Image (cartoon, rainbow, N blue to C red):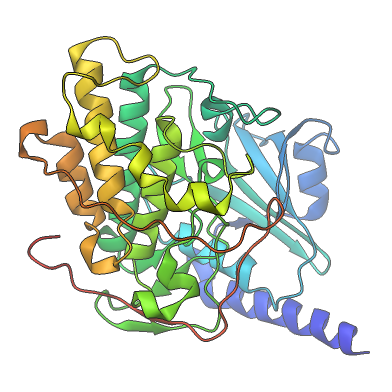
Length: 356
């Protein structure tokens, strides 16, 4: 009976949300439409913690990616987060939501189709967790800048401040030109006033990318700087200086992690990364390293805003300072796709200081 009541509450919450959105809501499809556009789910694109993604075609011929959401225990919050967050955005580096479906126990999200899939398949082999640089350094640099611009928009550019809370390679999609687009807003938190605080019961993310303050308030307040940390960890993974989170690194190796890469920053004469050949590639790789290490500073106030990160990436290498060595602290590793929850975290949106 309790389970039935929860399902009814979830349905009522989502229906109320759709009514409140009115004409601003994305197009709503029936589940029969979803089956038809995916040819009865015959072409699967990927699988994830929240659901499976299938290739589909709209009646007008446009290709789409259809995510069929798994049953969740929440009251529809993640579904509503996804639809509201993306519906309020319009940016070249944010995935476009074209429609949704919700019929009691059936829910789906319909996105623009991204022909190159997610970033993770280009930066490591998921079977062996070995680094596999298939992308040229110029392309990786452009992807890093694009993701930074997308996050800058979420944090400062759109009409509300959105903190994503789950930035990682799996949630970055690439179009036919390798233009990156941020996706999966199920954990996002929003603030109508950009400088107001957001009270939240849960702060979550994927192990290996979660900022220290998200799971331990002693490190500082949770804010948009938590996304900055996740971005930094992802960039380090892209350039090959941090292995895939499933590679089984020991806690000891995690603590010494930053020390293993500072040798690349301290000597311009002995700078070696896989695939770096030209001076231009060397400069791009070094800027990515500088920025990523600034982004993973333990204290949130020491991290740059995403606006500053974009400036650093696109500016002169000579103007960048070597970031201080940070103590890289992470929670105990959990099985693949697990999430960490902190039940009493307060999220305080922080003003960017003149330095950030």
